[in-house]
Image (cartoon, rainbow, N blue to C red; front, side, top):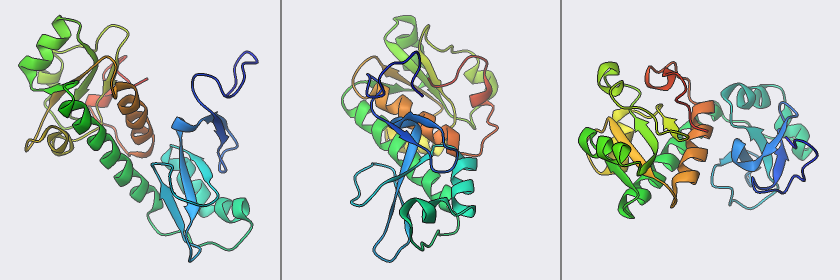
Length: 210
């Protein structure tokens, strides 16, 4: 929301209103939906599909509320079909988006994986973001700390991180300052809102993506 009377189109980007909750926030905190040719509601995670956009907070409960309470139909003023498991589909697409972005960061040299490499980046203050698999060993993860003034992402699985880094599984990863890092953190935060987790990795004190 606009704070202190600041204009909405500030450095955080344009804001949109959630059709389920009525809250207004920057676009990166919401998920865009459009109506397909057959009247079916389609998630537009990348925000590029044609048609009038409908915005819902990147939160599972908000998406489910919009699905069950007729918010999509009211927004477009027509009958629509809301597919079953819409929130699950959004989660799937967001997870793929985060994995793809981390993969791009890796290819540009802005991301590393593996305990020793991550530890090295943290000690040299190269890392801005610490990434750890939600299903990794808590004891092992506790040996690494989130960078000062940095961010933590802990709600991807070992397999998802493996896809991002071109391996079978990955538990520890890190992102450097700049490049795609800001976008990874934003997309990971959207995923966190939609993903049903009580993950040990995401529960570490003070280690949430910002």
